[in-house]
Length: 268
Image (cartoon, rainbow, N blue to C red; front, side):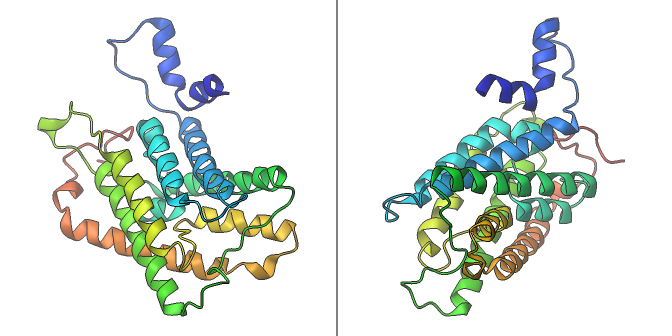
């Protein structure tokens, strides 16, 4: 499965290796590879989150989700930008076509949604049809304002971290230096959100996760356990805030004269 996944998300690397063209220009990453990368990354992250609901739910799931996110970011950032989250994709699209075109945004969001639904379906099979509530934990009496603030701010933090470490243009003088902090930074943002608001909102921070868990609840006739629409609205608000902060703070990253290394073609 690992070999098959590698061939699907990095077909160009396989071709270059076969033809022994290591010194030649690297071929463009096909759209199909980007879609598969987003699907696989989203699946792994959401399946990890779901499995933490098996057995003892008091375990620190924030660390496991952060580790999965870091691993997927390091593995797939060079293929698709390592969004794995529709909120991140929306945030990148709002920053301009150099970060994510509307065409790729639609494809990424579709792949992420399918990844979330697939992960939830597999979890349901593994855990004998169990459901995961997309709402505040029942044992805590939390006001709605805390949920809005938590999901919005920490989704904003996660989107901002991806924009600055994985998608922002690399200065010309540092173009050959790999950014090795992206996975760690994004993973730690996920961990911070998980520990800070895990007992407030469940630390969803991902519309694909909310959709996936809601689909699982729908299959099990537990739709009443979902506040999916509210969560997605809060997360999208966080994505918009992240895009605004990025454009205000990283003005040089929006310079059209700099080509973004993670994308195929510069925007004229």
